[in-house]
Length: 461
Ligand SMILES: *Cc1c(COP(=O)(O)O)cnc(C)c1O
Image (cartoon, rainbow, N blue to C red; front, side, top):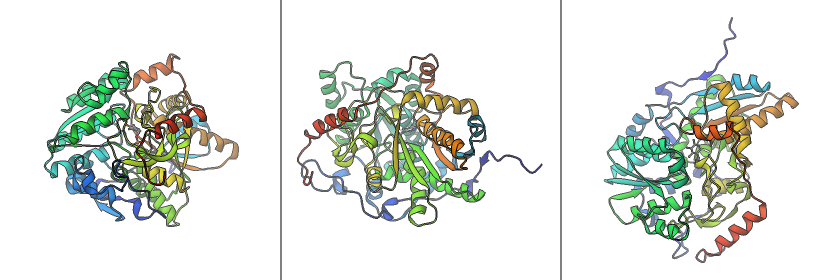
């Protein structure tokens, strides 16, 4: 019998890509610059140096097509990379679809998600610059875990503001961060001016990523030995994640398969960009023509319903102004279970590429995502992170459409993490207490318009 099914497309350690891909090199038009809120002028490297080391600032602004991954970073990556690419034969059978479904599984990392792909280089470059401590925010706890792991690798302290809803709902994530050597505070906290201002108005605030970012930035900005690390949104973060797509391209080349559709869930946009950008390079060069599609929650629909405008990346207004799809910097999304997708904005780079018509976006509701997540768990055996169920729901819907059309469409998604610490969310789904939430178009439009009136004057907006 020569018809053994191929479940896993392996790449050996020495086939792992050794450079990140910078899409800024290949875009038809550059994205609008970040602006200084005081002057309205584009920010320069010095404006960012209170928070980030120069190596990362250089990467944020670089237009070289590739950046070599430092040997020290490759060495840590090899703890779990290359990550496997799976053919989801069992999910295909459960659906009865002629589609060919593949998933690039990032849950094999120490933190259980794609986020160490960037936390490791960020910790490395900060340690190299002599920084002693990194502060950060975390939504579902995945980024805090990833940064604590990376800081431990390079001898840095790590202090994390965890969104209150997730601090209360996901105690095991906090314990994981602490076990890896990090310190955790619920956000909003009374440790910062930003946190105290929110608590004074809303003592029961469930928190948001925007508030937690303000707290972490405030602490880092005040001490030259402390820097801040962001887990998504920024150009250098998305670039670090391209190791996912570079590996996937090599894996597909081994089996001589070319995807028709590339899918990822989008919070700030980093895991989707990580898979999709190398495929977009191939598409722009005319070597393949896959559709690239991000999937966001209906309860936090920055790409599909947000406004494309300059806004702050945090709630208190301490970051540069970035042109992005936004729901308004003081938007507090419904506390859905996919905490990693509860961000008011979308990566400026993804937003720009979306505006250029090079990628698509859809929004999906929580319960249909868990329907698909549970189907995936029962067929493929992996319990997906709630964030990743958004990608799965889109894949399942596409695969069902192929039953009708008979099309053997090749679909690949990034399975951004496992859900082993999100089982209470599955509990809520299984016992029927999970709810759906989405917004009327007008509700969002009015809220964003109102939030944007509180911004400093921006030339041309
Ligand atoms: C943080 C997170 C996300 C969302 O962040 P992106 O930057 O959009 O990738 C998605 N999935 C998992 C498992 C996460 O931890």
